[in-house]
Image (cartoon, rainbow, N blue to C red):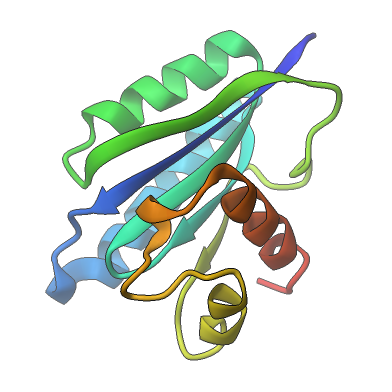
Length: 139
């Protein structure tokens, strides 16, 4: 099977008062669907934005990205890259996640992700490198 990687960033439309519950719902649904469809990936989340790396077959990744595009919890969806890859960067993750919080703020900041320059403003290499870095940390 040939593999592709798709990377996007978006603005978060999660209400602050239900943010934790909504993230848990996103993660549970993504893990279930990604496992069924052979998609792997990693989600980065901040109060103001999302960025995600998706890997799998072209059909499965396109279907996943289509669902994300219709999800009202995302706004200003921006496709950063889509193309063939030789191997997955996140093979063990049906869907990994890292949130910017008191534990990870320093690492996000090292990559230039700040409240003023959130995920949706970052270039492709920053998002992929940050996801790889945080995927190595224990969940």
